[in-house]
Length: 322
Image (cartoon, rainbow, N blue to C red; front, side):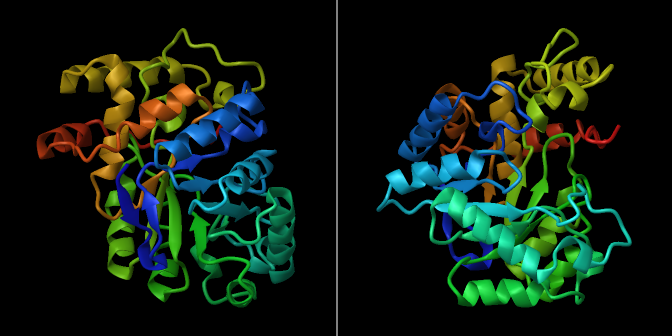
């Protein structure tokens, strides 16, 4: 496993982290808790030391906390998220931060997360949505600073709204944030234009989510794919989207001359090619997925030629929207 520094936090985190949304049972159907626990332990065995969860991920905080406590003595960094008080994802424009992240809500959510996980503190506390309209407004920053002084959190971050990477640059420039979490992948390359350079300039850690496009960049989604009833991917890949994703994934395979099973690894290496990226957090619900994804952290980087070829497969869109 290779490690990178998470911005100004100084945390040496595994460049492949663990995205724990899928193990919580809230929107991804089919996760078995015993297998999730085995997957988490296997990831840690292989050097993963950064786990990302959230208050809104069902049982995820409880499962993660139990595993981390079992591994007492090993330095494992855990990040969680505070949901907006109004429970609206993503944050629309025009909202006052008193509606989304008032101080009392931030504190109450954190205390609930600490109880659920059994942990004494979180290494990173993130807002689960963000709007740069909130910079300099509300009492959220005062509360964050208080929680740091109390030792309940060690760093503060935001999870940037889906496909809105420019909507955190003002916050980054203030110096108030330690990390940002953002969607970044072969299809969605916009973060590399302004967000990642801003993070590098201001020493802000970058946590990449959706590096595999919710499965679209694994090569295993096409027109014939069927997801379990109730799984959010039924909506994400609705209508003709599965067929289009399948065609575009195959185009990448053909362009790079790789085997279809190698697409996921190439997609992860693409996000790691930018030195501003601190860690990438694919969802890993099985031991098999852990072993496949962690194998990418072998010190081998994509060639400049391959990165250039992948740049030609940019496809900006937002499947989270209807």
